[in-house]
Length: 80
Image 1 (cartoon, one colour):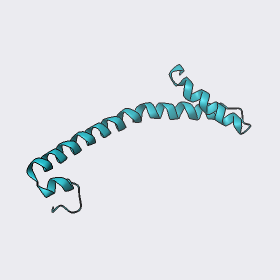
Image 2 (spheres, one colour; image 1 turned 90 degrees about the horizontal axis):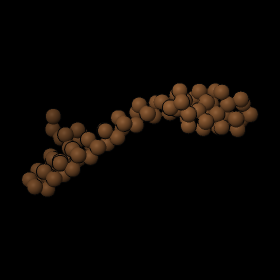
Image 3 (spheres, helix red, strand yellow; image 1 turned 30 degrees about the horizontal axis):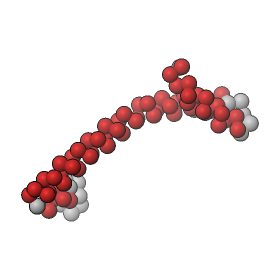
Image 4 (cartoon, helix red, strand yellow; image 1 turned 120 degrees about the horizontal axis):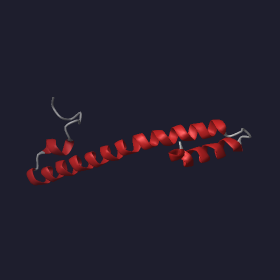
């Protein structure tokens, strides 16, 4: 529980601005911070993987001149 202390403090501060006790905000901040700790590494991994495949595809297109490589495999312009 102490791992998500920042989320709890921010959530409580936001909730107190509305005149509430801050308990619901602290719980919400705790859950949001925990969710971000789960999702953020997945998003970073996806972004790095996408960048690597994009760079490789562009490099191969520059070397071979194949127009299908420039479009990408998921492009609607490619023939199935």
